[in-house]
Length: 263
Image (tube, rainbow, N blue to C red):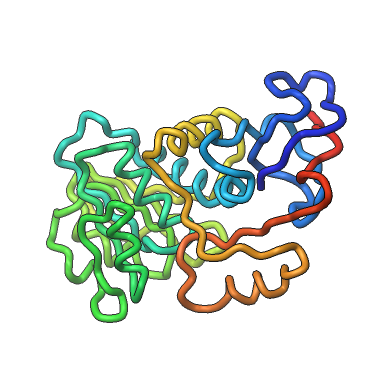
């Protein structure tokens, strides 16, 4: 979520001032006013508006922290191959771009379908499998990839992926809220990381903002809804063919504000 700070900041909340536009994690997100702790927000990317910035904190930070766990950034790696299991969803669209930002020469592989195939190619995917036609890990050769970021977490993916990961490689699965888990029979010298989800903090949000301000990563928004259309937004999010994020636009006579920031 992203808002403009107003009224009064709590004592000890340094680095912000009234009027700052920030993004991060808030209480009461579907509202014109909200509370938060100053340790879980940051100044929003300057190149993005509040609606665009509001789509980033959970999905983009989840992807960035997940890739960090696998060893990113990999600026010195010119032969790296990274797999993102689902490239067209909320976390996937950011994971693809961040993998390229962390390792410009990396080969990035993912799965998508329909219009998502063209989308992930535009976002930097070098090889895309149509998951309606082929199982990606059945198609990948033995010892052909270094990093698998399993942002989908389907049961059994770790076992399917293991043959494709080179010794010294890493499999990280986003396990919070899904049935995904690490393999009970991993390949020797392959590291496995169960990743339960995002850990909000200002420093990582600031790093994320730099990626968006530099243009290395861009927001991907399928559609935007007003506050009165909240049920329709949830209905759309549960339907098929959602690419990227769905955003909420909260308007009033004054810009979106919050009454205070708590420590």
